[in-house]
Amino acid sequence: MTIGAILKDKGNTVVSVAPTASAMEIAEVISSRRIGAVMVLNPDQSVAGIVSERDVVKAFAAHGAKVVDLRAEDLMTRAVTTATPSTSVDEAMEIMDAGYFRHLPVVVDGKLAGIISIRDLVKFRIMQHEHDVENLRGYIARPY
Image: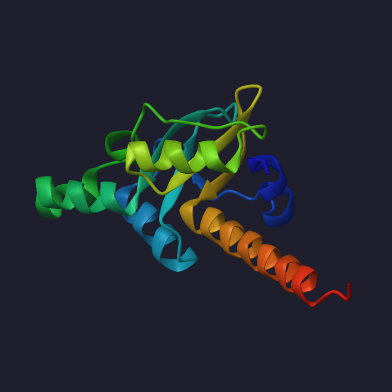
């Protein structure tokens, strides 16, 4: 199974902000949308970076109350690891595990096409295992 197939089911809506978005705006978006990260997009919709909950917490620890003066461009991870729709689920899980992150942007022709979370991948794995169990039950219960 590929990331593209998961995006087809999940949809490709991605919450994003401009590089000039304030730390407060980012925190409000993350909190109100109950998500773990927001993409930071350039005007041409290419990926400028990603800001996660962890980035906001690290900035607060480093800057204290002055964190409210920071912008997405100050908080974001710039070297964003991405996938393509043809990336396999196994590859995506390995990428996320190796990088210790929970969100993997999906890019097509340099533009953001969606985002996959570790939750999406775990949900897929659970559904895959449930399907395998049903197939085994059907195999065992079949008449000879």
